[in-house]
Length: 243
Ligand code: APR
Image (cartoon, rainbow, N blue to C red; front, side, top):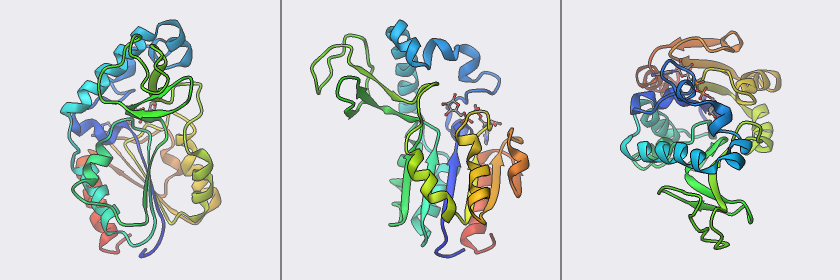
């Protein structure tokens, strides 16, 4: 596997052991909130205060969370891997980035937040993306245009196009190892990546999750358990040349 291309897809399950809720498990975010109230452009148009409050809470929770053993193991892999390593996350938290401060990644590494980032806001007038770690309100003036209410969370809502899709289409044919970690396989296009990788490359495919995802039958290898246990073990196997 040396010098080969690894693509990792992560979802909410990788951040559970850091104290962040998933979306669809019992007690997950979509149990307490309706998607159509807080996670669509229409919801933001109708009731921006409610949408801001939802993401303000997520942003505040993030400040108390820390990367867990699974984030750290991927960061270690990114630091040691001599080929290319693309980490695609559906997560809007910054735990992959924070894990990398301990293990600075090698040159072939790139991280993509396909569903946006909690710690960023976007000006609806100019599309400028701004680092943002505090609460957002309908009265917050935008630093770029000065208009109150112009900033929205930099989150890809239902009905919007995920980010970086054109780039992913270019790298899938080059994939040698595709790992899917902590994602339920409910939400496309991410749930369809394993099918695309299989169609376009000869990649080995592995699912690492607490339980079988909706697309588990598409993976050649499946390992079930908490990410904090199974991901570090799998990473050690990769680094030992056993995968
Ligand atoms: N370790 C590994 N996997 C876990 C753990 C754990 N400790 N705990 C839960 N899981 C698994 C669950 O079994 C589930 O299959 O993580 C998965 C989480 O699934 P979802 O809640 O559906 O999250 P995700 O797949 O990331 O959702 C995709 O949906 O609402 C949107 O934009 C949101 O990015 C999100 C997208």
